Amino acid sequence: MTTPGHTADAASTTLVTGPVRSGKSRHAEHLLRQEPSVTYVATGRRADPADPEWSRRVEDHQVRRPPSWRTVETTDVAAAIEAADGAVLVDCLGTWLTAIVDETGWHDLDAAAARVRSEGRRLVETLCATSLPVVVVTNEVGWSLVPTTASGRFFQDELGRLNALVAAASAGVHLVVAGRVLDLSGAAVVPVEPGPTAPAAPTGPTSPPRPARSSPDA
Image (cartoon, rainbow, N blue to C red):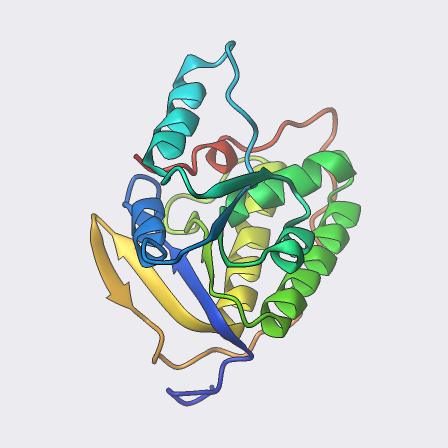
């Protein structure tokens, strides 16, 4: 186990994590309030008239952002960071992972796992290469029951691995729970090891797990 105070490769990155409705997105936005230029990288799906509840979540995020912030809706997070000319806020890794698997297909979880891990490594490389302030928001979905579907277990496992990968490289790690912020930046880091082979694809069509689309905080 790495000792506290380890040197972070992504020296200008802060990872903000926590459960749904914990306030993590608001905390992440607050961290960049004083920055003169911010690119907000939105990784989730857009507002949808057919889903009013989701649309309200998206709109809540939009109205909180200062007018000067630039919004980029994309799944190519690494490219968005590379193109930015100021601070960057990425919200969030959970919806980003879902979008990546949507592109690959939930019917082949082996291929999806390979794509997620490849994109995760690319993201970390980009974070390590930039000197711009970057705040990355993610979800903690592994503190509840184990999902009953293969796709749900896949999402839970892969997001946990992705969170650990980004956290290990980040200079700052903040855990937000019940509206309170715990600074884990100086905590010991568990070595990141390759995960096991992804589970076999379930029989029949599958859909993305519900927790993946509930990430925006109020």
